[in-house]
Length: 445
Image (cartoon, rainbow, N blue to C red; front, side, top):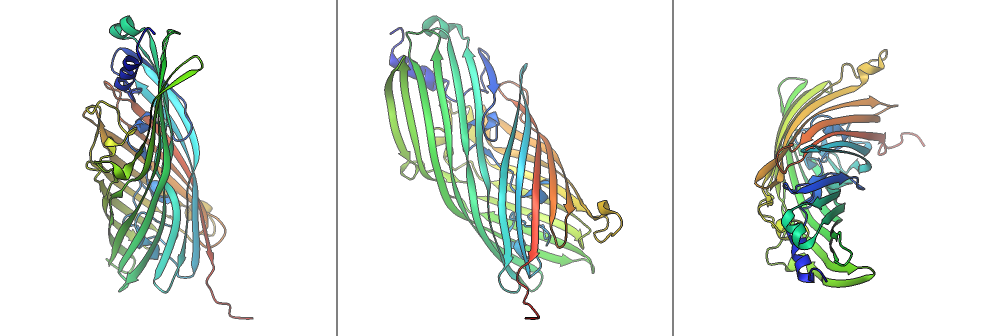
């Protein structure tokens, strides 16, 4: 063999998971992948999904202080009590994403469409209610290629191509309940179950036929159980106008499951297994965790005509040890490091005349918002941030609170500078709001 197995393995480790963030000396090509696609999902648990349904997303993602009986709002479990006492409600949505990537003089585009979430809400007793649902927590999706042109590497080992791909996601199923006390204070609690699978594959392909191809695979099965608590307080300013204060706290929890870590070398039809190990996460010395999260919000609303809201959210990922999980970080610690994520969101909505019988568009709800996010990691010491503007519109259908909501999110993550990638995106989401009276007693037999 021109290169010993140990030498090839060392080369694979050095360049593990660097595609898309390569320094000079490598030529990259970003290509399509299944699922929600972004090179930033190469690290950690992937890209954290923006929480909230279409109504939340159309207003910049706010919802901690939202009290609106026409929509299900799972961002704060206390808001489940803002409803008609006899109504059954359901909400599900479809999401599509269009992304444009730039790194240096390289460009790439990618489009995806996915079912996003599903949830239902119903009353329990008087001023209490429940909601149940499922929605994404994070996504992994990328497929990248690189050609190494470093003269020292070529002189000793020849030309190599690096291929990296990943897919999968983590979901959260939840059940929540809330109650209103003294007509102003609402409290709620939410049980959350995280579950999902992540896959990351990496391969070094030599140009010489007498050298072995090195493949490294990580298959992760993850789960966890946690709780979220929320409260909202309504302060009346006059007969129609209310100021609402909201707060939420989600507990951090152990990340359970296992990682199948496989490494093997192949030439022709011969496969030589270098390593096959299963890492049970609960037995790791530095036990990984899902982060805790706290959020605060304040909103002002006038009846059902208009409302405005601002939220602040912070999640403590810095001490979660997910960078110690095999497959969640590369071998160069300086390139990927954890930090606390932060988000500032603001949004408003207005309905010109909900009861207008002449002009349909005056009955529709118009929404807009903005956000600024700091991601839960840094790359080569640089904080990754994203910002965007959102717009939305709800078209009422038939009776009660049935409607179709359309939302658009136009934003940017990262920057086209050094090893970073600038990602510009346009996200579309369509939500279906279903409402009916299920719990009314018949007056006649």
